[in-house]
Image (cartoon, rainbow, N blue to C red; front, top):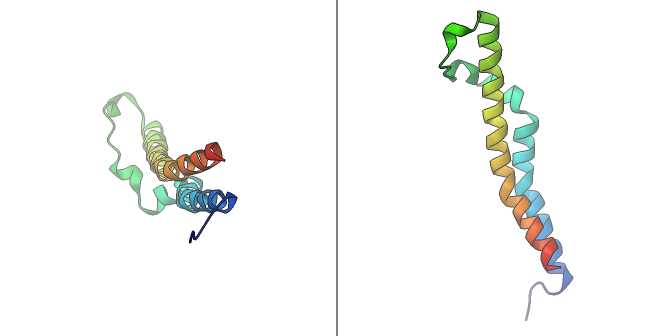
Length: 91
């Protein structure tokens, strides 16, 4: 006896892929807030600090911290996206 058969199995795979994508999407969407809340810009290392003035350095570190959070969010999103692509290609 099969629990899930036919096209219902693909729907479950697609829904599971969407569920796996949700935390990554939330992380990417809220990246600026996450970076500011945990003060990640203070932990960013810049190799060319002496070439930038204070405002440029602060902006660079803030943008870099946001980018790192967004990349982590995209890495969290990737397994769900792959799952959906596989489910749609099998259909």
